[in-house]
Image 1 (cartoon, rainbow, N blue to C red):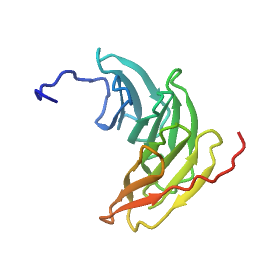
Image 2: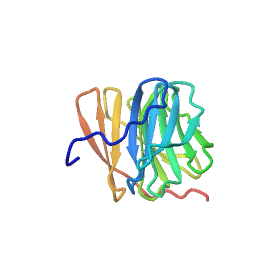
Image 3: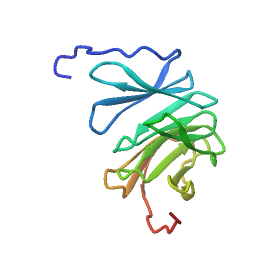
Image 4: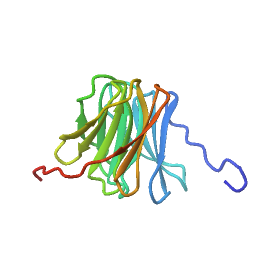
Amino acid sequence: IGTGACLRTFAEHTNLVRAVGFSACGRFVLSGSFDKTLRLWDVATGQCLRVFEGHADIIHSVCLSWDRRWALSASNDKTFRVWDVASGRCVRAFQDHFERVLSVAVTGDGGWALSASGDKMLRLWHLTTGQCAQVLSGHTGVVTSLAISADGRWAVSGSHDRTLRVWEIEWDYDFPA
């Protein structure tokens, strides 16, 4: 950032890149593309370390869990998926949204994810059980982006309705392990 010089170019996707995210440590980048794949990159070498395949449509959003165990992706195929970074295998596809899933975020502990969709809803998911714990509604337009605070207490969403909404996340769920 200090010099503004481009240090590395990652060029293995076969269609436009829609989403990117850094790992918490800054050593890795995850990208998602209209080519329906995610790619994990080593920032220092520029090497593609893993390709994740399985979405049936374009990818809008990606993120890595803090411990780099999980990669998450949101897609036009009305799913968001959780991938095992070590194996590249999709471990769960969440399919309860009625429209394309446009954004996904994961909590700091890696146990929960929040997804946002064209159905104007946000959904809070327990990643181990796959259960939807909470549906957040109130936007009158497509929800295109979201983020979860570092402490996991708050979420913020952005929408085509020209608003940002801040949500307090409830954590009193008792799911079986």
